[in-house]
Length: 92
Image 1 (cartoon, helix red, strand yellow):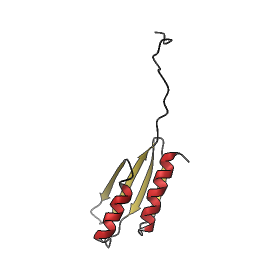
Image 2 (image 1 turned 90 degrees about the vertical axis):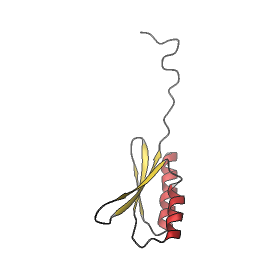
Image 3 (image 1 turned 180 degrees about the horizontal axis):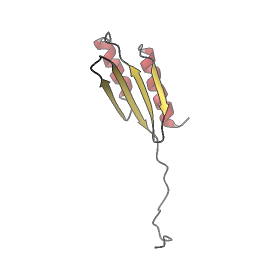
Image 4 (image 1 turned 45 degrees about the vertical axis):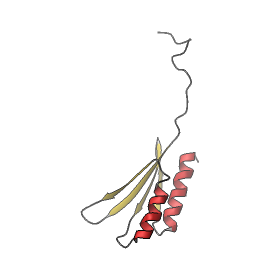
């Protein structure tokens, strides 16, 4: 599992421990975590949830007019280095 997957799994585990079952999905350039947030989440729980997703590279909350709330977090995958592509042996 790539490092992004490990970080995302750790975030998902913390969310699940807080009562928010999370889904983890691998994508080409990142790993995502999503969890539905109930209306009954307390202020203390919100603080813990925010501490968990703060470990991600990006996170947010998608809220709809139907009172659905989905918390999301993204962990970027490392970009492999390719060296000096246009170095001395580069021909035009």
